[in-house]
Amino acid sequence: MRIGLLGTGPWARMVHAPALAAHDAFDLAGVWGRRADAAKELAAQHGTRAYDDVDALLADVDAVAVALPPDVQAGLAVRAARAGRHLLLDKPLATTVAQGRAVADAVREAGVASVVFFTTRFQPEPEAWIAEQADRGGWFTARALWLGAVFTEDSPFADSPWRRTKGALWDVGPHALSVLLPVLGGVRRVAAAVPGPGDTVQLVLDHERGASSTLTLSLTAPPAAAGAGVELRGEAGVTLLPDAADGPLPAFGRAAEALRGAPEGRPHACDAAFALRVTEILAEAEALLEGVRQHD
Image (tube, rainbow, N blue to C red; front, side):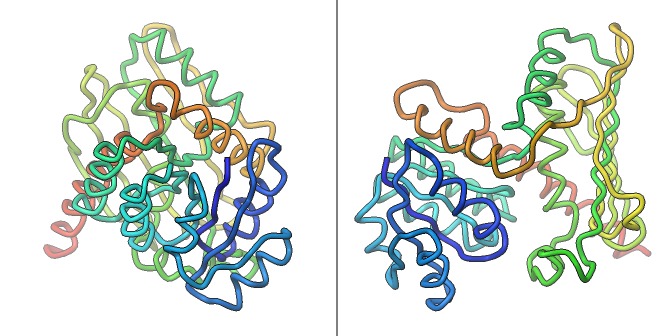
């Protein structure tokens, strides 16, 4: 499958480009970026072509991988889907429901495949645990912590404008939801949303299968406190999300492989429609948080 890469930032350099260039089933056919010099540099590192025109790249590939801010990703994803290109997208799908729905609608109308890279869902140990707990059922409540220390000098994402603007809710919130939703079911409502220190937010969710969950999300946690975890409590007792044995680069390779197989089978569990549901929950939480801040 010939695939093009849209984006040249840290995530594209660290994960997307090396994973796609090394994957036997893919031909990394080109790179496009909003900065032409960065596109040329990244393309040269991986022995491929830099494109100045995104439509020219779309004309030469079967699929695109996107490593761009979510508001930029959404518009380009619609454009690529309408051109008949399969989509390997990043989370969050978009930062508004309207943008996210436009992507999901374009995917459905064009009949193209989509996979959204929720990292945890493509790591074997966590994914096996998620499937096991979803089958087991009987869960009463869940607690998810996703705490990062992103805005530090040694973080490659410290200067990310969209992360500084949208914060933990939109950056790590999708990771937590990608674990909780397949186990506890969809969210009937965001029952509460409270801001904490820095960009920290705390959410209480009411799930369709009767369980509740609490989420604590932050990109501004002290480095010594950073980490992620999910705890489930129910009829089977207590269980914790296991650590992954590998990092995002091999996980992205598995997401790419999932995209390669998706056109001939059922939609992937982490497709654009699932990512839209995540976007809707985050938007509801964001509205509640804004209401709280206006009254403070």
